[in-house]
Amino acid sequence: MDQESGLSAFAPAFLGLASNLLVDRIVVEGATYARRTGVSAPVRAMSSLMLLDQGAMTVTELAAALGMTHAGAIKASRQLIDAGLVERMADPGDRRRKPLGLTREGRKSAAEARRFIELARHAYVALFEEIGVDLYSAIQAMNAALDRQGFDQRLAEAAAQIARTTPQA
Image (cartoon, rainbow, N blue to C red; front, side, top):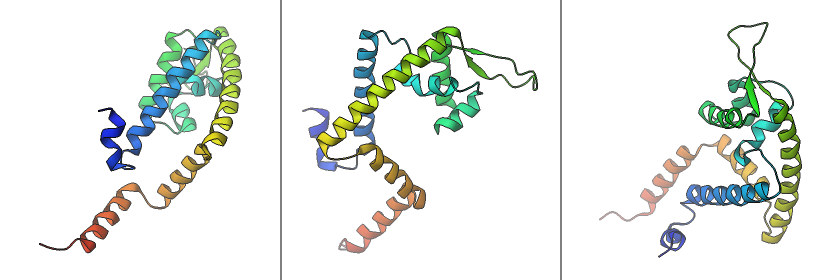
């Protein structure tokens, strides 16, 4: 029994798992295309690379700009540093601040990443037309709804609703 059919009876409760599997597939297949076409930037770190192409940022600033955790930004920046695309810089105005900046190779990779992301945008538009759902807009709408009422509150409401409608033994 494959993973999906075993859990499909619980859909959409495993939305997180399905979303993670989809993201992993997109990253793997995107990375395959990137390698085949000579794009050197790590696919999972392209957003960081493109932001750093606009100017140096600390890891904390990068995390805030991407809406990700500090740990996630550290992981992305390490990938870019290890690949020789990003380096830590000195801030003459604040010795404690160590912003990240692109290397010469990083600037070249940022341009490659920008072209790759433009291709991805076109591929997503076609995919969304095919499936009849603008998934990006749907995700944005879902996040906005969760901002209005968190998932924890929604779970509590679901539990209360089930308790009200379930006959007592």
